[in-house]
Amino acid sequence: MFWLTKNVAPEARSEPRVVALDAPARRPAADIDLWVLSELQARGPMTRSELIARVAEWMYRNAVRDGAACVDIGLFGAKLFHAEAAALLARGDGQWWAIDKERPMVASAAAVEERASHETVR
Image (cartoon, rainbow, N blue to C red; front, side):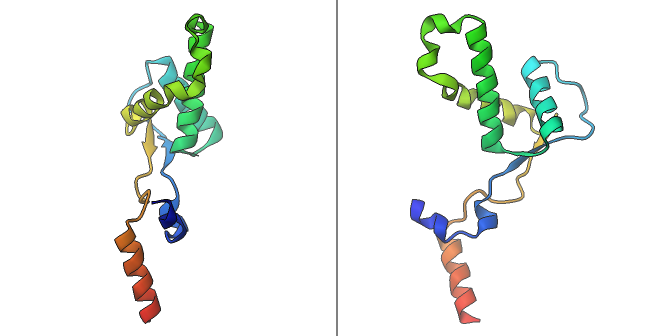
């Protein structure tokens, strides 16, 4: 449904943003959680996909450093870790950072058509 993106309002197309919580209940125990929190505090809010890419790159570099290059991990690159990075962000949501769920990721075709018909009637 790639053709719908032209009909969707820009605010509906925007991606959820990830923001560090000001006062998390507890300090992260895992190195990756601590790294994500420090990245969010240093750089400010990021889009979910941007942060997933950065976390996956961090995981990839650590895997290569720890000897994963011996199993041809270089063929896949950081994309190999995108699913794990997305799960990590979902796990930390509400504990150390918040994923902005205010904006919908994609509007349905019916909602776009209905909005367009109401705007033309007025």
